[in-house]
Length: 324
Image 1 (cartoon, rainbow, N blue to C red):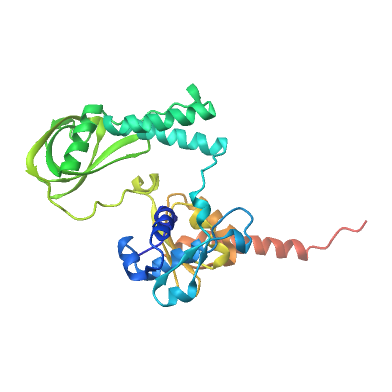
Image 2: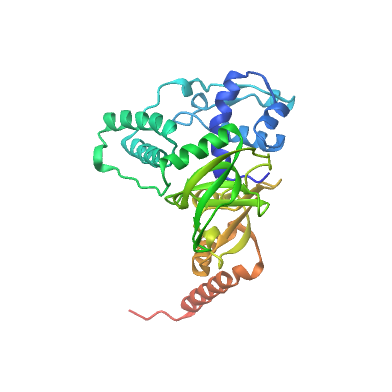
């Protein structure tokens, strides 16, 4: 499985409390529970090894028994600080309040009340008040409520849907699987019976939901959502870089399609590039940290720019200096 920060961070946040509740956990069983390979789980544990309280001294960091890990057992210690009450900065609290407001906008009425209560408590402590306003195009609350009920009960539904592409209302029968938000819009991921494929429906275009007696069928995992606006750009080209450790930082700063750690501590990172000038600047900044670029022509302009800069520097150095 490829490693990306978007998938690894939530896994790490769930992994620590799980291991605290399951001391001396089995490596293979834990990997299966989290849906990753044993090799990926070991890589996760090595990341945890460098996590902890501010200060970064050995006593501040989570400890992983590597000798036990070689025997297929996971023993985690010095993570008790995670049980302490969380202290948020103002910036962190505002970020959380914005996220809760977005979640409240897209939740069904039952969930929305719990989210609203949590948000109100935070706003009361930090005095956010009317300074935070979030709008999500998530359709009507009764639509979200019916979809939530159908997903919980495992039932198929018939939608009343106004699709933008057809310019007309349709009534597809679907097996609903997931409701999510992205870029200010709510979406339903569902298996369309007529098309026999996964489809995504905007919640604000669903005008009616009829829960059917027909049970929903398990069609396997829901396809992963696109990770950013570049996924919608037809002119975005996929580029793969092999990066030495000095260039590993880019996987935390730029959206990645996939990241794979090779045996020699090199990362193979794949990303989408829509602006060749931006990518040229990125390559010039990375410099020798880039081991290879695929396809090679993606690096041509950066190579030419670097060669031109070197030639200009050599020419300037060879010019005679004016006498005082």
